[in-house]
Image (cartoon, rainbow, N blue to C red; front, side):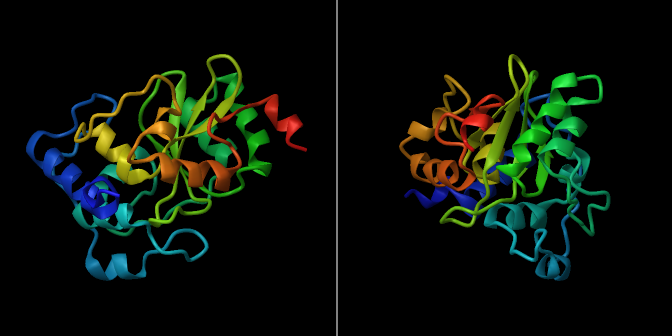
Length: 214
């Protein structure tokens, strides 16, 4: 494993890029002036259920708490408090009330019952951090949801670290489809962990697949 391609070390590269150039995509809120989360706040901050922050998130919040507030994770960038929305409520928040298919993601909550935090990116699709089980590096998966045909959920990134690095264009990732990183030489192992932990498998699941899991 190349340590520079994972976790806090990868986030350091993201921070350097964002400081120099900002985000290279209009999908991401601007970050004009970082608002670091104070060390004493970070030391007591946990995920829902009292679990420790993943390394990527802790490093990012030490740099800035305002960007994730703008994305919709919490209200106060200096004192983050993570919400408790599940997949269905998070999808409805991201897609809006006028997307009738967004409500179908509630049906996935029996399989994916943990808290979800919204992220930017996509048109018919959306990304979110799923706080189910961490991988061996302590990172949680970024899932993709899609409403283009049928409600669909898959593991797209092995963690916030890789998602932010892709968003900032500090690593070059080729996506032929949403689950392309399952065969990436650096990230395949972590992707496989999340595919198993979430029971979404390497290719993800569509709404009708849920009946076949019973």
